[in-house]
Image 1 (cartoon, helix red, strand yellow):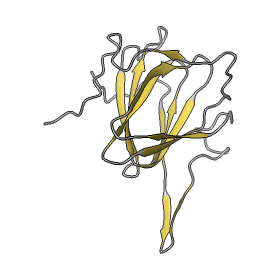
Image 2 (cartoon, helix red, strand yellow; image 1 turned 90 degrees about the vertical axis):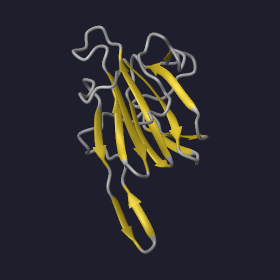
Image 3 (cartoon, one colour; image 1 turned 60 degrees about the vertical axis):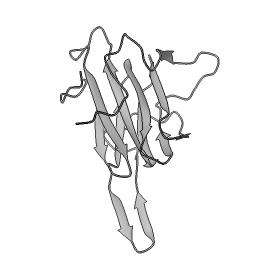
Image 4 (cartoon, one colour; image 1 turned 180 degrees about the vertical axis):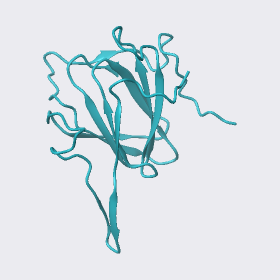
Length: 156
């Protein structure tokens, strides 16, 4: 069940667009932000409508996500044994209609689904670079029975 309480360590930074007749400029992450820890790498992921990329967690790195095109629904599940919010599920919407940076702490299961009718572009600023020799990724299927979350649209 989704909770209004945030999972311990999850943080959100509201992003601001500086708009004029040419378009807009939007800072996503600065090294003097209190949400910043360290730079690992930066990459962008294009995702088609309805695509679900879930579930996984990291033991060493944090992810910092910004969706610069389209919309995604991020699912977060706290499976950490020592966490005061163990078992909590959060759902966060990111994208053009809600420009935020989402910081996902070590150990929190996470994934996302592109919602709407156009592809999404998700930019990630993980705190460590990807190591193909020893990937810091631990996976569950998107429909895992171990995670109490349903990726379907809630109608109502």
